[in-house]
Amino acid sequence: MKLAAKIMIAVCIFLLTGVTAYAETSVTIAEITPISGSETAADWGAEDVGNHAAVHIRDIPARHQPIDVETTTENGVAIIKKTFAATPELDPQTLIENFEQDGAHFTFREIQRMEAPGEISARTASKTAAIVSDTDDRAEVIQLFADTINYDQDGYSGWLRLDSTSLAIEAEDYETYTYPFTRTRDIPGLSRNDPALIEREWEGMTLSGLSFRQGADGRYTATAVYRGMTTGRQPVSFVATVDYYGEVTSTMPGNILYTIVYEQLTVDNGQLTVMESLRDDYFESPAQRTPPLSIILGAVLLIGVFAALPRIVKKLRKGKTQSHETINQTKRIIRED
Image (tube, rainbow, N blue to C red; front, side, top):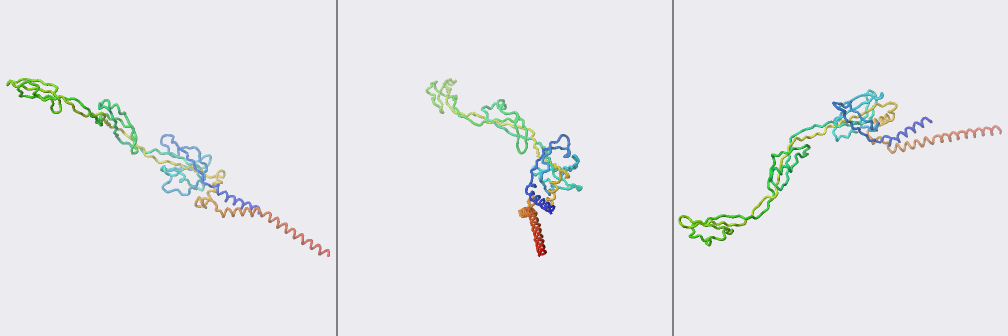
């Protein structure tokens, strides 16, 4: 009876500890840096992290099958490394599984991560730059531009170099100003060289100079100089543009290589994980792995019953002993009579 009580108590403790003992554990991912040359996934190394994490994913999607499987041993323990090529969006924990191989059960140990080189493409790019200048002197304006500029567009990046032959300058803003001007007018056929015969104002201008010359026919020709004011427009700022050219590149992200490391369960390291595996084989989902309330209450009730059982047996034995004593006393009385 003592053996049965111990077994039942052990079963109850196992059910109760299932609430917390098998809670999911976060998995640490070790970053892997390749050494050099053309290493494969089997050549990479990583620090030991996330040992024996209780994470069990039963099914791996068909599109995420390993691209490399390596079997090795460490200190006499079989190690299996499965390498997967995945996109950055993939959660590597979905690649973890429990499995058996050649009759041996393997459990998850760690995840190793490495980014594969991406694809690089190149093309020629151009970019136009513009500045505002207060001069249109080409030698001065070209000095205002940088020799190179950075290019970052449509996923391509790089440095472009100035093409000085593409320099173009155009006036942008103008101002109005006033300036004097003169016009000369010849007046022929005059009978005499009299200034009174010449107009003082002509087409908005004022007479500022006068001379006469006499012809062969005796008549005079007057040369009159008139002076006036007018307005003009001149540029005060200029827009200069220039082109830059160069080769730019774009790097497409490569796949991420995850290596899932498993180790064979042994008597020393596998007792707890074997129980986890048996539980995983019986319960389909992580939610079912937590015992329902009825099982927990039943387990508590069983523990109480088995705890009280020794007292009940003791009382029954005591009652039986008292009954035997009563019968013996009765027999002695009868004999005496």
